[in-house]
Every structure is written in structure tokens, then in C-alpha cells.
Image 1: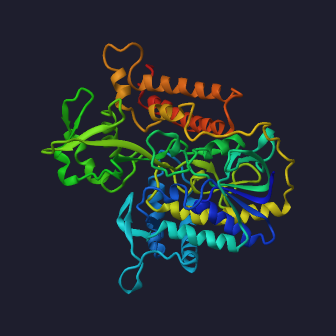
Image 2 (image 1 turned 180 degrees about the vertical axis):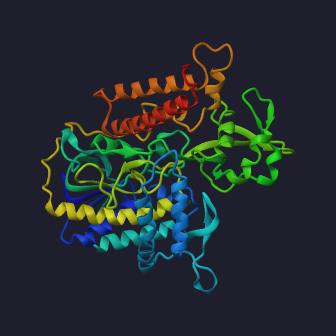
Image 3 (image 1 turned 120 degrees about the horizontal axis):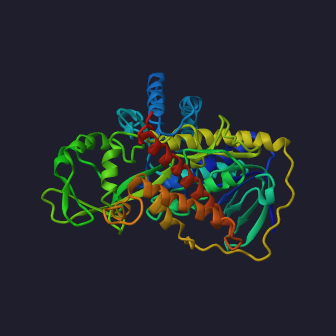
Length: 492
């Protein structure tokens, strides 16, 4: 068995379904196939939000201008394209109206007025709407997609793109049983999610493979912002709330078990830290996160408590979503002809940090545009030659046998975990602190490159390894730049 499509969409979250619908409607007569790893809602679009989800919904030009200014100001130390951010905000409202037409309205209050909430990294403005029922939204979008002629294949997972050096549409996928199937497509839309699933502690949702960056890079597409993930402190199954009014009471039991109060100079950061759930890359209040991470135990938790509490709260730093991906233009095109990207597989509409609700809106805006562009490309593109599938059926295990997640947890968190600091204490052999961290990361990247040369590494793991390498190399470049920035200038 093999598959042939005019437009192949990998992924069935908001971005993938949006792209598929747009491709089917704009490219009437084209065969559009969606590879959906599992039945029902999937992807980080539907993870960790208690069934509801925030979505940027600016009401007027004044709000759009304010969001644009903030989005660009928090992009550092990553990069964002002002044109893409502006496009996101200008074309968001039409996509929201389409959702309403499909029976997926944003939540409303008295008088039918849209409910609006403040957003992470923009606490002073209520610019985010509330999508109250993600599962219902998925059902409605799936219904519209099927009515438009989209073929959705539940249980099918993308395994390889650009097989044997061919174009992106020369692909392989896995069916429900793990059998490898050749795929030929004129256009490919990559919407398989970001790299959060590559970490041990992740809340990116079931079915995430962490392969998006690997597929893009494997085809030769340019990527950006790769190591800028959203990391959140969790206590049990919920995000940990920072309480500014109790900042002076917060204390941590360090690696030696002795309680340490939050230093006075960090206490003012608790107020700003309470306004955004993810770690703020490059922001002053990231010093608070770094202080906590430096006190992480080898078990991967930070025991904290407010003064007077008897039992510690065990905090874990969880990877939730990625802000990096393939660099795209306004129509979701990557730097490789025939390959389009959207959702967490794409970047440029935000940088290192993103305003709350921006990714959900980006999935709809750029998923829609990528689908139209992919259909247009398919009208003039040739089907690639049939890819060669492995002789034996490859069955993929549900875990990561290469222990990639453990290694990523050690080397690619935002700061320096307590275990690494412990190794850098007086008496430890070899370089200490940031120098040791950089050397360990350099060794990790070399090991990842070596894994890619092993024929025994199966297809999905190869894509995961390449995703890990993309994140690790980006982090390594940033570490080197940070060390160079603080190194003393050579004597004249």
C-alpha cells in the first residue's frame, strides 16, 4: 500500500486542520490528506488547559498596535519578523469569525459581549478571548474539513520527509500497526508540533513526537529560535502560582537540605513573574527562575514553601511548547520548495517569548495561509518518484530508547540545574560553572551527530535526534555568545 496526495498535511491539531481545510477549499479537485497520529483532539493545542484555551483577539487598531509593540519587545534574545507579527494581528479577526460560523464561538458574557482576559507578557490589557471547549472546537473543525473533502487518516504518523535526498513530498509514514508506507505528495504542510516532548518533564500533550524541527532541518529548511521553549513551573499537575504578597516568605530547601530564603534582591521580581506563566527569556525576572533552577535536586524537583507551611511544595520545570521552528514567509513557505510549516513547526511571528494566546491565533492565521499556498504550489508541481520503503515493517516504540529525553533534560533547560552546580562545587575535577556547562553541551551535540550515522537508529528516532541537535546547537551558540559578552576584554 502507498499514499498519493496533492497536499499532504502532517498533524491534526488546530494548525494542521486549518491548513487542510484551506488547501481543500482553495484548491478544488486536489486530494488533501491529513496524517493524524491519534483519534480526537491532539497536539499541544489541546494540552494542559482544562479544556479551554486563550486566544489573542484584539478589538481595534489601538490594541493591535500595542500587541505588536510588546511582541517585538519580548522577542529578544530571539528574533521576530515585524511583518509576520503585523499579519497575525490583522488577519486574526477573519479567522475568529470563521470559527463562529463553524459553531466554535469564543466565550461571551452578559449581553453577548466577548469575554476578554489579560495575557501572559501583556498583563495590563485584556486582549485574549477564551475558547471554552477545545474538544468541541476540534470536532467542529474536523466536520468542516471532512465536508470540504479532506481525507483524515487517524493513527497515521509522518516518519520521514525528503527520502533519499528527494523533495519533501517523497515521504514515509507509519500506519496504526507501525507498518511503513510510501507517500508521494506535491506539497507538504508540516504541523506536527514542537520540541517539548523531547524533555522528560513535558506537558505538551499525548501523541507529541518532538520531530518537527528534525523534519524541517532534514529537508534543508532554515530554522530559528530553536532552543526557546516555554518552560513552566508546575506543582503536581498545575502551574505554580507566584504570590507577590508572600515573596518575603518564599524559601527553598537547597541541595544540602538547608532552607534558604529568597534573596532580597529577587523579591521584587515575584510581582512581574506572576504576570506570565512561562520562563521569560532575557527578562529581568528570569533571575528568579534561574535561582530556583540552581536549587533543583538530582530528582528534578525544587522543594519550596512559604514560611509557616510544614510540607514543601515540589516544583518541576515542565516543557510546554516551542517558540522556534522553520523560518517561514507570510504564506507559510519554508526555504525549501514544496515544504510549508505552521503551528509550532513555524517561527518568526514571535521570538524567544510570545504573548499568551498568540500561538493559537498563529495556528489559525498561518495554517490558513499555508494551506492556500500549498494548494497553489501543488497545481504546478509534479509528483515525486515513489520513495523506497524499508524491506521490513518498522514498529516504533512508545518510549525514547536512546534516552534522548533524559539528556535533553540535563543539557537544554534554560539555566543551570542544581545537579550541574553541585558538580561545579570546590573540589570537583575539571572546569566549573558555565564553562563546564558549555563543554558538556558540546559533547552532547557530538554524540547526537554520531547517532545520526548509525543505521540502527529508526526513522522516528532519527528525526527526534535531529530535533534534539537543532535545539542543542542553538543553545550552544547562545551559551558561547553569553560567555563572550561577559569575558574581560584583552589587555591592550
